[in-house]
Image (cartoon, rainbow, N blue to C red; front, side, top):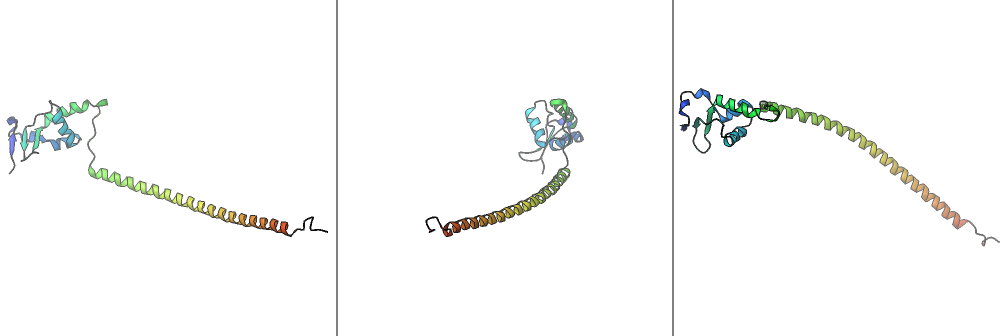
Length: 161
């Protein structure tokens, strides 16, 4: 059974004029914690008119008109006098995330393809130069062997009569 506590009895029978803090946050496009912080930090925040629920976290209701007037003044104090826009629906945020990830997959797939082509060219050039290095080593070894043969097979001046 829910508990109901009237802190401002003048609103009894006028419940339609009240709004709970969570709905109030949604109404002005801020987070619930922002409204909770305002209520704790600002002595001029509209006073709670009704508490419902049992336990440590009852639902708090404030007069909607007082809340809107106070919030308008509060948000007008922001640098540049800008009010935040309403929070975007979760489905819109998720849809944007989905689109972002799809764009990233396309971009990274194209990058991967370019890098694969570059890697293939690099590997081809590497193998070509490894083969040419091997052939150059073989030619050098042949030249060294030929010079060695010439030195050992050519008669020297003391060998001739």
